[in-house]
Length: 178
Image (cartoon, rainbow, N blue to C red; front, side, top):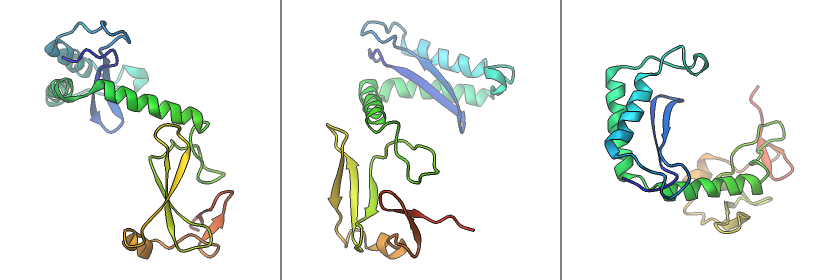
């Protein structure tokens, strides 16, 4: 049983409908449940869900879904590194703050999460580069890409330019289809 203060288990019964049970309380010694007890909590959360709960977003679940939630909880508790997951989430929060909430590909688009990597063209050339946030500072770092590596992509996706894209503050973005 993990002793992480950040431990949790979850089960998605259908896309976007997720049941979640926090197990840690944020302190190193706050974890007191046994594996089976924690799995039962998740199964009970799935079993207790119905159309009248969660502001009308609840669902009635089958016996198979309840059993699957229990088994999923056992699997998560035996295989998940909750401390590593917490570090990843903290990194995402750091990037979110550093990049002022994310990135905007197009001026009229909503903010999107900071990507792990972006393949983008080099202005005025038919070459491509990879932009990734630096793992320590979060600043964007550009890496040139080997043409052989990108041959299939470059042949199937033309580099954006004024004939097939619209100029943006940084680079180009795709034209809207009409």
